[in-house]
Image 1 (spheres, rainbow, N blue to C red):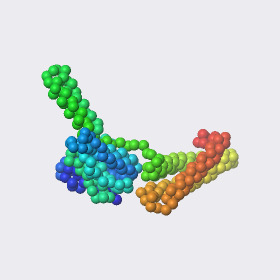
Image 2 (image 1 turned 90 degrees about the horizontal axis):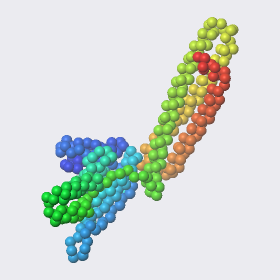
Image 3 (image 1 turned 60 degrees about the vertical axis):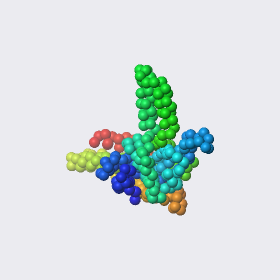
Amino acid sequence: MNPIASCPGCARSLGRFEADGRFRATCFNCRLKVEGFWGRLSHWHSKGEPLLYLHPQLPKLFRRRYEFRIATPGRELKLLKFTTPGLVDQVPARPGDRIGILYSGSADHLEKLMAIQNYSLGQTFRPSAAIPSTAHLWKVRGGMSAALGISALIGGVNLGIITAAAVAISLLSRIDSAAELSSPPLRRDRPDEVRLMAELKLVQQKADLQYHSEVLKQEIQEHRELIKRFQTLRSKMMAHNASLYAPRVSRLEGAIQLLKQRINHTQQLIEGYQQTTQMLDIELEAASLADRLPNADDFTRQVLKRVEELRAIEAEQQAAWQRVQSRSDFYRLVQGT
């Protein structure tokens, strides 16, 4: 079951995350608009680093840099990077934890990081002030720098004040916390991400099978309509002069029989695709338990092998049908109806 998101402003419940892991809501209590997603933590990194350290006896500044790689139920990989002031680890986590990220912005664009919820540990990190994105900070600093430049050109501000302000901007750029959200490429040296690649392959196979099934269903419909046209033509020939049209009636009956055989083979192939699609659904549903299921990878390979077998059968049937269609007598019948 998908976890429940809580408002970063007033901590009230906002409802459950969507099936694909995404979230969007407006808090009825504080009117805060929230975007977000949840997933399992595939990689976590936390490291303290000095910002200002001149001497052990002098004041010093530190910050902690975090990196979260999160795989969502929608099989997207999200990379969240952010910093917090101080050396204390304020966001404890471990690989495999269920993590929810809440922020302002749009679905794929983070403006300000507002909260991180660790559902596995039952802990929530809410910064005292929302952590702005790197792009947002650059806009603010760019505006301040432009204002300083204009002031310097006009000459209405003392040079010393401008210099002090420039130093302050430079210092703030190092001290300010920042966040960045992206969708990185999957890496083959990470078991969780390798498994995610396999899941995405299953999703693509399922989509391909569904597409092939729809194409084959359309083909069956076209062949049934062609059979009706052949049968109508046969009835007219028999009613007008059975002996005169006997050779053509025989060819029509042969064509109808071929079409019925083709429909039967195609229907069997569609049923095979549907059964395999159901197997893919089961595999995708069990993907979250793959590391706890015996021989899970072997079974997945068996499903993919079955997909290849069905595609080979379809290719053989298609080649045989093309040979039938290339026959001159069949071609003339089809063109003549």
